[in-house]
Length: 376
Image (cartoon, rainbow, N blue to C red; front, side, top):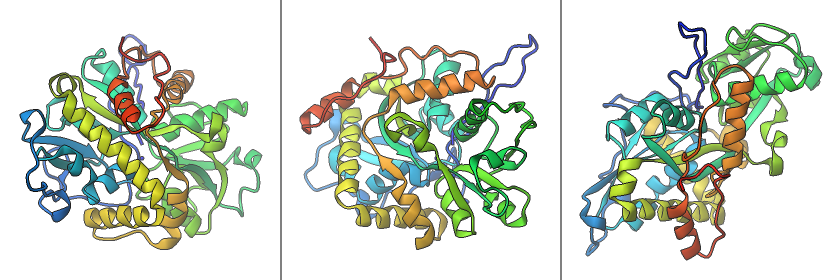
């Protein structure tokens, strides 16, 4: 789930991009191993089929993702061995990450080749490298973000004024969305301090439920499963962010690849994308099995699965998608600029959807659009 724009002041007084964090995570603590935590790639789900051949002679492809429900495609594709099936004898090696900056760093250092990640670190990584380090090559998830409040203190959206509302981090994807919503309500808040007509309290998702229970916040604009955890504590969903977007769709997770890896191993990239497309279809065809698979993957990561009163509503609010919803990524960047958290970025070339559209065509599915932000 969060991804962040961060724009501290420079000595010249202009705001600039800085480190980002990824979509907020589940309340899990992974054992650190390098940039992230290595998934168990020696289990039956990842074993190479007998007689399979390596694609382009490559021994392995290094794939990164987060132990987060908004990364359901990666969770399920890893758990069910669906990526490995498409890769043949080229081994899928998985690494799980706790934050966007570490995944971008791993991509830059070639510790991973392909990653599932949020829109904000994708934008930040691309602009900081002047368009040289990554491409977005596919979509993965939409939705799964809600404004949950204490119903005793907040009866309507207008009641949010004057209250303390948590977001995961300054400038992260949900923080930007909330600041944009506040601005559209006509209220004023200083983006960096969070002070104003609404108190924006930047709070790590792992402690947001406890902050809610203690009364130190009155609500939160957060992704799943944190939103459903708050509801389980007596909170009420007063706004689903999907309702603010055309067709109720907006990018929350996409797929990125190192530009050098894309150039050197296009068939391997196609195989991973084919695995993603087939995983998304499997999730659609088998929603209950997919939910159980994702929860099993989360249990492997944290030692604990999500209870039914959390995972059931959380799962329903997230939609897996092959479409990167490029126009909404562009809108999210514009919202961050409007909030004063981001200089206007040049996103031309951030997408290369040609491999994905090739896969989609072979699967009999419609092509997806890059909103004029693709490579020429």
